[in-house]
Structures are given as structure tokens and as C-alpha cells.
Length: 352
Ligand code: ADP
Ligand code: MG
Image (tube, rainbow, N blue to C red):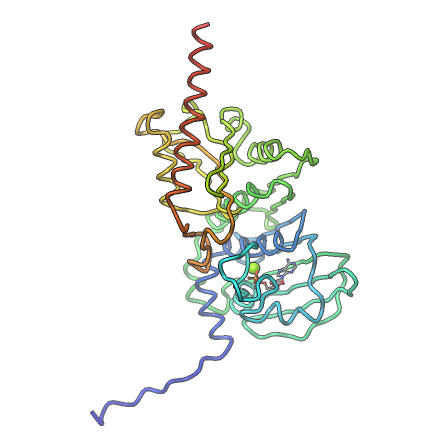
């Protein structure tokens, strides 16, 4: 026993802790884009621009016209577990995308991060953190809002760098996440531009002049993202039960697709992947669609934040409902009802 060397227990330093946390929060460039866009939405931005180079590996730059960050708060924004979004007293009542205070310190630990920002009534300033080392706040030039620039993602964690896929694959994942986020925010304008010349060039989702009507705005945005054809062949859905609202568009059975599945599900505007919800969607179409077909749909579930736990995973793409039976039942009944009605209308048109 005395031959076994005694292990030394050490407290890890902040930079190491942040690098470890970054592994969970930022899996790839697209997850960094997601964090930056969500921060911009949380900041009340109505226009968000994203520029990427080389699949986001060398550059991701997010520009927004949101509330900005005061110079004194810049070091805090870069600190771990520091957030302006919750006070920690009620983790079940969350109204923002962010709340963990982990994204910026994580990105600064594994890449070179510069934030330039201006909040109303303050001067513009910038701060830089590279590989976990923070530099002092400096004066900067910016009219309003925030520009977050992330260069050389994972340069400080070479192991993770090796897991990166081709520029093309990473670009595709970025386009995908921007589309999903844009679907849930029809009143926000988005531009995604590849400045390295590769990738898809430029994607723009304009926020149409406010009509005030949810379905007009949502239909326009879904048309931009999923194609007009989907919206023209989809039924508007809007139903509420036990404090949970389900709305969006569900495709007519005639529009269904074989292989390519266009199913987008959101809970309180968060894009989610959830077996229970996709199962409910399949169940709703059971009598209307042959087994080898997949319904296309973009469905949004809105509910009181206390009815759903989003704090399941650092990336927050999983959610847990307090009572999963309610959203499931709501999806099945609302969609079945809409599909049956549409079927009736179709058959009576044929008959007359
Ligand atoms: P979280 O979003 O969980 O609060 P982050 O690390 O993503 O944590 O951001 C830390 C803080 O920095 C936020 O709480 C917010 O106050 C501020 N912040 C980050 N991005 C922006 C932005 N684009 N505009 C204004 N404030 C921002
Ligand atoms: Mg955040």
C-alpha cells in the first residue's frame, strides 16, 4: 500500500475550467453561431448579421443592433457564471435563451474573442479574451449595438480542432442553425454571409413590414426559410389547452416528402429535437399518410416557462415538460382536426 504514489488533488485554474465547459457548450462552429445569435435576440436586436469564413473555423462575426453592453460590464460578460438574465432565485422561470453565463467565457477560452459594444448613454468599448487570457477594456468606435468576433475557434484545444469537419459541412450546419433560429423570430432580420468566398454565399431573411398578424409574419418567414411551396400547401394550426399554445403550419398529406424530413419543432422559440414531440406529429398523421411518408411541419409550442425545464443540457436543445401528455395530446388532436377538416373540404369540392 505504501508503494502506491499518493495522487495530488489540485484546484484547476479558470482557463482550464472554461476549456472543459466549452466542450459542452461549443461542439462546433454552428454551436458558437447559435450562442451569439441567441445573445443578440436576448439583447432585443431587430437586425442580426453573421459573417463566417472557412466554415466558421477561422472567423465568426455577429453584429446586432440590440441593447449593447456598458464598458464596466464587459469583463463581467466574459466571466464565468455571470449573466444579466437571471438572478439565480428561480431556475424554472426563464424567459431568455441564455441564463447560464457560459457561452462567452467558453468561446474566449477556446478561441480568440473580441467584443465591441455600445449601450445607450455610454461610450463604445471593446474587450478581448484569447485562449482564456483577458485583456483590459479599451475604447472603441461603434455607433450602437454589439459586434462579437470569434477567430480561430478551438486553437487552444487542438484535440477538438481535429474533430472539425470540412468547411462545407460546418457551413451547412451554420446555415441550418441560422434558419431554425430565424423561423422562430419572424420580426428579426437575419443575414448570413460567407466572407471566405466558399460556402453558400449569402442568405438573407428580411423582416417584412410589421403587419401585426402572427400568421402573416410567420407565413412570410417560413416561406423564406422552407420555401413558398410549403406554406401554400400547409394548414395553419392554432390551438390552446391547459396553458399550452400550439401554433404554426402543418403540411397537407399531399405535400409529404419521402426521405427529406422538414420537421421543425420549437418550445418557447427554442429549436428543439424531441422524440416525444416528433412521435406526436407522426401519430397525428397516422390516418392521413402512408408509413413511408414524412409530414412536413413547423410547429411552435408556447407555454409558461415553469411548465418546461430547459436546463437539461448546456446546449439547451433538449427540454422536459412537467406533463408531456399535454403537448403530445394537443399536437395529435389539433393536427388531426385540421387534417380531417381539410379532407372534408377537399372531398366536398370534388363532389360539387
Ligand atoms: P448568458 O447568455 O447565459 O447570460 P453569455 O456568456 O452568453 O451568458 O453572455 C453573458 C452576458 O453578456 C449576457 O448575460 C449579457 O448581459 C451580455 N451579452 C452577451 N451578448 C450580448 C449582446 N449581443 N448584446 C448585449 N449583451 C450581451
Ligand atoms: Mg448567451
